[in-house]
Length: 169
Image (cartoon, rainbow, N blue to C red; front, side):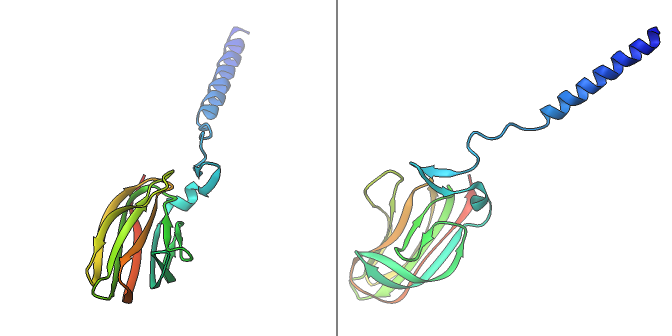
């Protein structure tokens, strides 16, 4: 009887240990399930930000001094709005942005950024006179916005705006 009792106790302890280890292997759900929000607006899920984030657009017109590029060549992930020409960062990280445009001799283009919860657009880098192109790396946060502005002159040819995330956070 003593051996049978010991075996029962050992089995009970093994079952209890297995149950404890099995329960310990299940992680607690995250406090934030990967949803990026600004205020109460849902921007992107972790799945949206897990892959490639890239856009490239051309065929520009100017609306309220902003270059609005109507033909989207590449739109992977989330963030670029062809209707406004604005890229809103839903997935934070290190991004490479480039822009180009050519036109009148007084053409000046500027890549500007509006930080999350800010009301003002601030210049990052410019080209001109006569246009040109530029490329920059920027560390951006969720909710930051970027757009190309026409500071002066007129665009006649070759307007583009491209961005892609090169490093996730």
